[in-house]
Image (cartoon, rainbow, N blue to C red):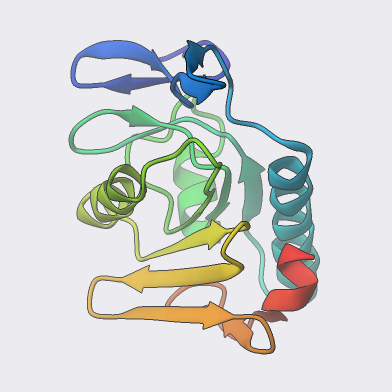
Length: 175
């Protein structure tokens, strides 16, 4: 858990690929789930969060940084750590809880049930807010302990509990 291999998460007591096998032309093939679109959205969201926090509040933005949930080890695609938690855990190899704000960019081979379960897991382990970006459907779902909101093209998605005041158009994020 202290040095998780790249692209792996600790799930149900086993080290597993973050993105599972996919079916291509009727055959199961290995895939890391990363597409150019996925990577572009991940980079955009990390940049948007970083630029906003630089002008508004301290803290740190990470990509694929390891954290420990109540159940397993995870690495959200993008995450924000508050100044208080940076002071406490900023030099740790693995954050011993969920990030307060996490985002998962859903790949074509991800199952919605698994992504939603991961969001719940983050929230049950100290997370306050989770963004789920669905590039193919052009949705962003923001989940907190008490609410679930869906944003689509033509709308603006905003943080609900963490990184107060941040917002971005869904078009700009998912374009």
